[in-house]
Each structure stands twice: as C-alpha cells, then as structure tokens.
Length: 394
Ligand SMILES: [Mn+2]
Image 1: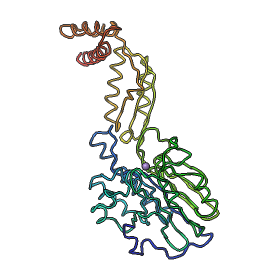
Image 2 (image 1 turned 180 degrees about the vertical axis):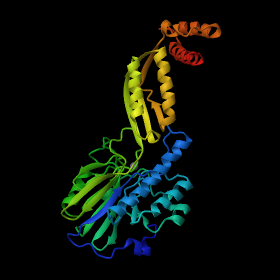
Image 3 (image 1 turned 135 degrees about the vertical axis):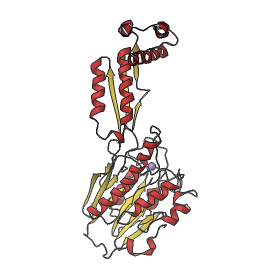
Image 4 (image 1 turned 30 degrees about the horizontal axis):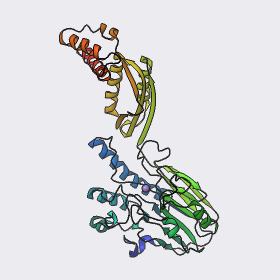
C-alpha cells in the first residue's frame, strides 16, 4: 500500500470492532479531478475544476459533522493518469483537509498501471498522512474486527471480474467492506465484458457473512444495486442525464443493520430541456425558464429546439441566447435534436425600411432562401442575422 498508512496513529483505532458495534463511514467515488467539459471556456473550466476540489473538502466537513470513522473512494479519483501536476497537488491538498483516514481505489480512469498517477513522484512525495491508496488486491485490516476488501484496477482493460478475484477464499470474520469499481452484471448490456462484476456472487458473499457492504464506483448517480450493495455516484455532476449525481453516501453498518443515506455535496448542474418554438409566447417561455434557473454560473444547459420561427422571432431567440450565455456556464444547442426552421417572410422586413446595400442583400437572400434552393438554410440564417443587425442599427 502507498501513502503513510504504516506510520500508524492516524489510521489505527483505539477500540477493536466487536460484534454489534455499529460503524459509520462515508462512501464516495468518481471525483474525476482534472476533468474539463469541452463545452466550457477556459475561465469556466477553472471554476468547474475548483468545484471538484471544493467537493472533496465538503466530504471532509461531512465526515466531521456526522462523526464518520473513515472515507472510501471507490475509483476514478482522477480523470486520468495523465492529469497535470497542478491537479495532483491541489487534489492532495484538498484530501489533506479530510479529518479521517481516506482510502482511494484506482479505477478505470486512474488504474494502477506503470504510468499511474498514484506512482508519480508528485503524488508519492505529497500524499498526506490520512490518505491511503488501495494498491493491493484483497484484505486490509483497518482495526481488529474491521477490514476492507480492495479490488483496484491494475490496467484499463482487466480480463476478469476484479471483485470476484479480491473475494477469493474469503471466510466470515468480523465486519467487511468491499471497495470495487466497474459495471455490475445487472446493468451491463455487453455479456462478453470479462470485467463485469457478478452480482449473484456478491449477494452470496453477503448472505454468508463474508461481506457486509459493497462500496462501488463507476456509475455517476447514487444507485442501490441490492441490499448492502451501492454505487455512491460522484460528488459533482459530470454530464447530462445523471439523475442523482452530486451526492455521497453516509453508511451505518453492523452485522444486522445497514443504512446508506445519500447526502448532497455537489454544486454544478447539467440540464437538458426541449422547447417547441413557433410563436412569440414560446420565446418568452424559453426566456422565463432560463431566467428562473438558480445558480446559472454553475449550470450547463443543453437545449433541443424544434419548430418554425419567423425572422423576427429567430432574431429574438438569437439575442436571448447570446445574452443568457453570459450568465450560464454554457448553453449548448443540441444539434442532433434541434430542428429549427426559419421562415422568411416579406412582412418581417416591412417595418425596417431597408435601403441601398442592405436592401440589395435582403432581396438576394430572400431569393436564395426559397424552399428547394441549394443554400436555402444558410440564406435564412443570414436573413435572420440581417434582420437583427438592421433592427439594432435603426
Ligand atoms: Mn469508471
């Protein structure tokens, strides 16, 4: 094992865990420190990275507030083994603030291969004394009567069920928490994936008293897989479609009892929303929805827009999105889902009274925008822009 676990005091306990002693700990995973969503510009990506570090500190505060004995992080602590030095230094600094022993499991993003971040000079030289990397597969005694069973990823593509391997030859003894990473058979569509974690095998180990809790990572939403088997999900959101990310699990456990309470940690949101646009009220509906969102600077929005707009309304839409983009972390149009047509209508320009070059451009674009013309769509976009510019210039 790496880290300073063998230095003693900080990771050993005064009292052995006897039968009936209930322990309380935090289960987290998928911190993915160093992750940068491609939708964010430089400044906002920096805020996003900082939020992931802040989440680590909040986990530490939660551990203190709720008197947890330790924290397990079930894989993908880092976005990849190639994260920059600054991410490692800042990540370790945040981990040092956690007031309890913290156990990190290498996952598929940060496996324990020869190029592993956990073997880097910067990690090894700065790893705080409360942090232990679970580098060895199998049992680790935290204190008499309490053990972790670690299933670290040795490479990006393991050829076997690492959890099953880690549990080989287990016999009932004391209280045991398995820490594993990857997809469980009940969620895996690909039957040929050799690394799938077999759920029935884990359930048997729990039924026979060999395991008392399975702390999993990889899914980003908190998920109860079965009794005593949970994914914690990540403490901050990473993508659209995560229904329950941004949490950690507070676990209370003994032989007869297990509760896992999801606790909110995260501050960022990824929102996807569909709008049908046709009339002015629809643009106002979109405006109202955007306006009412809390915490816009930490919200990434993806819009699917459908319908047909006149040039005037398209110009209004463009202006609205341009303005709101300043407030939100990002607003993305989901191109695949957006089917927005612009209708070029002579009446649109009536009130603007164009002349000279502008009028000539309008006439040409109107002709090009007729249905069936090869460049009709681009011409309509240009008309919308012309409409907007002419309106502004008036
Ligand atoms: Mn993963």
